[in-house]
Length: 78
Length: 350
Image 1 (cartoon, helix red, strand yellow):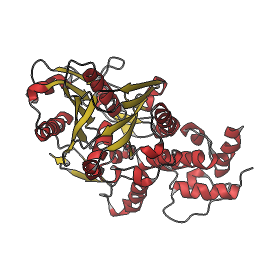
Image 2: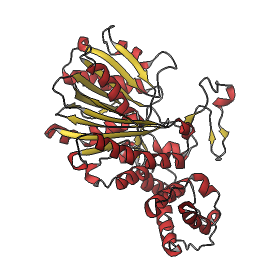
Image 3: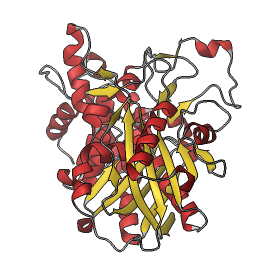
Image 4: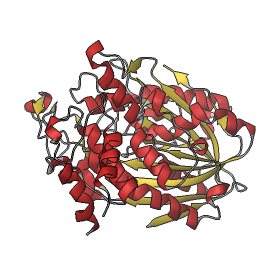
């Protein structure tokens, strides 16, 4: 099982937040000012490079919280 | 997988032309500064060159071709083929290449036609023109490659900040002693919607409402004649297809990664280009980039990068390049070309 803590670190780097934000598993994406199309691209790259997992724009559109994105790793790895 | 080896064709020269007008992605209201800096950091594009109103791709291409022919000292009567790779033609019909035969003052015996490709276009253009020359009847040919992709006034921030305008002219020559060029090609039409202008062709004929900006599914208002980019789909395509295509090309050639002097990729954006570079485990110094200053210049981005980053290296010694283009179609192509001190014009501004 990949660590949630590591994932949140990876997520924070991928999104490239302008100000420091505390990200928790239940944090809602809609509450993050930087959760935009650029952030989505960063997260898709991060999934590919860090987890060897391909996710799509639609996969991300279906997520509402950080937990949902984290769950894509296990889901895509089967 | 389509692969090919092409002999008897020499890469003789290259000239690139950009508009004088510079657009900066950091030129914005003070409250937007931090957001724009984040954008520039991630897409890697600081400034772009954009055509003045009325200036089009073929105007830049004409200047590049004139300088190239002059620099090479070629007689126009020796040029038998003129190919244009663009998705910004002068008119829907006729082909821009045929108009350019006349504007360049090339003989009426010139073979001329357009190839409708975008970011993947440079290797395709080299292969098609090279194949025509290798057939034996035509000695010298010119390949004009590029686009006017900038769209001032667009409300699509992603699109606005990405594209720069550029045109390039490449000279190829029949030469029985030239080293082989190696090519690898691919197409995936199932992804045609990832980069598309929907209106204006026969599938969706132009109607008055296509000239109005109307909100799309993503909330961005566009005209029917604007390019729609599906960023995640393009990213997934690029990092899925390009690294294995480059590896397959190397395997089909006599060369190892170490025997390639430079890898020149289409300049898509920093995220895509860096991911491809890391997947192929290529050192940064072997992968030149022109993104920061010129942005994504569509099919011109590979030759533009050679002009602005490799001119000195290519003048110093024979150099082996692996070039790779990928994008709209979806389409991709890579090639390995040995260049023995070709004529390289300094970057031209118009």
